[in-house]
Image 1 (cartoon, helix red, strand yellow):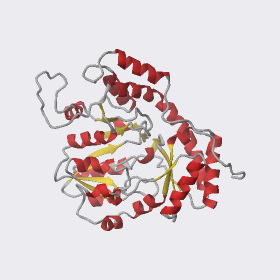
Image 2 (image 1 turned 45 degrees about the horizontal axis):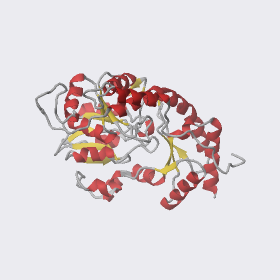
Image 3 (image 1 turned 120 degrees about the vertical axis):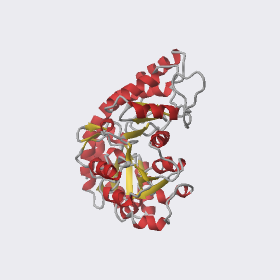
Image 4 (image 1 turned 180 degrees about the vertical axis):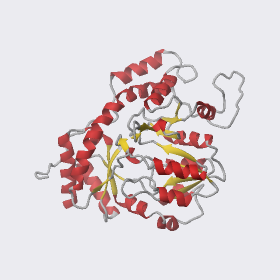
Length: 387
């Protein structure tokens, strides 16, 4: 890492778009029907996104948080239920359950992969547990083999929070082939995006149709008499969003290929920097889309970490501090929190306490850069840490 660069050359922009998105928007505009009940873009996107992920049963919704809410409601989550979630995640994972009146139970994660720890999940299961929600952190699958067994033994459902896992594979199986419901986000920073949007994948058509009712105010697709058959809300995706996402999906595989090539190089370079520990990839995740390039700096103070992130940004590397532990967010305690204190939860989440304090992540567009830029990132980080 000799000859430290002062800045890193500009990475590819995000979001990316081109004539495909423009054509899709015009196509949606000119069809004359701009909502899913009259147009064709949402229906087509659902078929294409589902096929890409190994299931014909996909439902497009307004955003990733709503995707989780719809999935949880279909799984029967409501007041009195508990949903086990990793304590290290974006807070939508817990809020989706809490908004339905359930209690979100945070548990510890693995110190290497940052995904939920199956042993912690097993210890948290009670007779009130309704759903276990693993989060595939940065595209790295949680241990689905262990979690499947825990869920089956306990008689509870698994809900994959796959907001980071577009195109991921676990031991050759796609997200939609694992037998459990999965929720995706298309928010502006995600691996494919229309600014906002979400999708839910289901293992069967019956469950998908129940979710359709939930996402459309309880109203059947062909209803003309306002026969609202269940509770729900308006979570319907619009035609313009779907048109953009169809174009985004078409370029996803190629972008994943590039990131899969860049991450091993960057991770190896980061690991050579004293005090830097990159996220470990479980080899059972045999296709990882790398939503983030994540690494820890154990022992760093919060103030120093913020200064490091600011210095990286100033030198052309789009960097961020990691998610805050959900139980250390004020909003977590407003509704549906467990009957524990912050410090009691922290005591049983020692790995989360470390990761949320010392982890840094880089935007996935860095991994769309050149091989030389991977060397430049590592050189800049080494220089910043030495400064």
